[in-house]
Length: 436
Ligand SMILES: [Zn+2]
Image 1 (tube, rainbow, N blue to C red):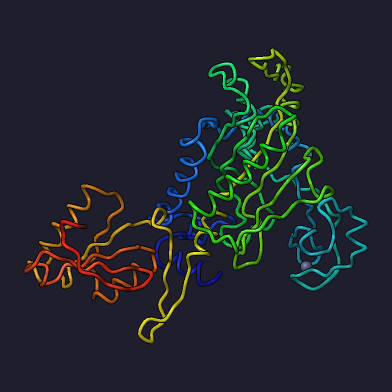
Image 2 (cartoon, protein in one colour; image 1 turned 90 degrees about the vertical axis):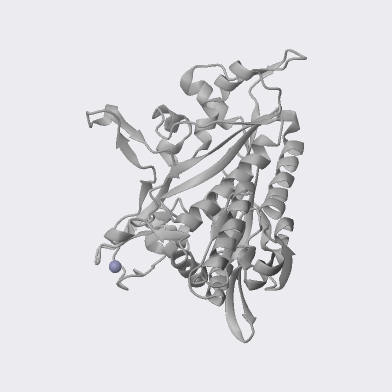
């Protein structure tokens, strides 16, 4: 994990948030390489699930929503973690992370666990309280309870609240899905593990609306699609992806089936994404809270019902981390340790790096610029590098995952061929410029 964090900072992928002011707990900033990687991951997801399918449509809802949203969804009442404070050193902890207790632990249960403060070693605790993880804000100029609002803790509710607008405007046939990518916010008591658990993060969620009698087959199809995406678009090895069938007692009360798809991260096997059958829980709640009819009318039979929902939910940062984890490799080249990011070509921030063998030879630089310009006309994400010597450039391009380095040398001036060097094998071939 430390190796990946260090590479991310050294090469401009991910920095601690507000670094110049000493940081801001639970936030991370993406640098030039990181934002390119992240955007490619998000675009690949959007292409796979929205653009290349006939049955899933995109939406983009506001982050600040009517507070009734969170009453209907249950977040206002129950979206909380058990918080406990040490009376000696005043450090606060998530009770279920420092003791073998559940998220719903009572003060008595926590006392009975006799756990010592991880900070000062004493056992003198205040009562466990449920701490709501939604960030609050105020809308407009008056700061009182009537203006209180929340930063959304999930993107899903922006989809559910638009279900009726979509049905009434584009008349999709069931089953159909609505997809959204966007920021979500959770005031985690103890953010940790790099970008894995942060206070501000991005989600990619699909709510797939189905006839209740068909939920099982639709669950299977989406589950399969998620695996296809993870393995074939994200390049994650199937040996590192695992299904965790969530036991009935651990599922949300309304869910009849939930699978957590876990990944072998450096911090251990942890949740990468989830697929949940949410029944008609959300649309039913909205129907009650808003008084609007959420029923779907079948175009053939005329039958009406509230659709049930299957929800594949991805965390962008967790996917970024999984991609980095599976790509990070250390090997040995001519007796020297080499760090290489074996990113899939579709995700690498740069496709090609073009450089002159020597930067103080104007004829080489001019020829290299010509090749660079030519590739630029055809491709995005081509980079130019004439820093240091060629060995150092290869090392840098290996660390940021550039699949191919193209080098212009004196032979190029004679026969119009260049060296193309492969990131993974370090093998080199001569290629005619017109064949690039
Ligand atoms: Zn303490």
